[in-house]
Image 1 (cartoon, rainbow, N blue to C red):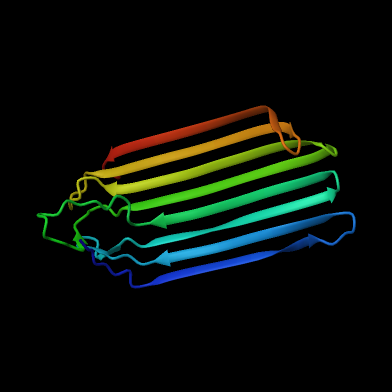
Image 2: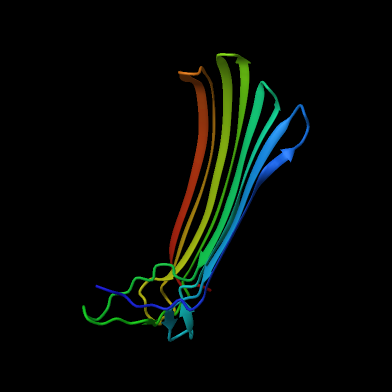
Length: 203
């Protein structure tokens, strides 16, 4: 069983930076940063719109910072974001038979999928004594998703399908721990989700 395809062009870039960000004798900190970019062209040709479907771009960044203002306190911060978009939303087509392979479609509506993700977290560690520390952690996450597809996979302007999903959550926790035992004493959180699906004709 095999499949043939041609993405023609693919570009992948990645960079990372790490090192100290504070030089004070009383404080120290470290930072790690990552940036990435990935793109490739499409390989499914639409005979109605006259271009190739399937191109995709994924890009984002991650940042980690650790700061210790003194021997008793330490702060961790994590930030990340991702942006992904493609014209290959729901490219699932039924072939005429088990022996036919085609790289062309006849959609009227151009499929697409866009996703944006962001997250952040901050953690505080406080050393109360040699064998007892307190930790507080707060995190946040959000995602935005927009999908468009041609529902019946036919060149008719009546079957546009929008699929939208948005999510978000925030969580907080705090507790104490000893070298061999970690005990969380409290936590709270909240999340939300919105989903929409609409089949019809775009005005």
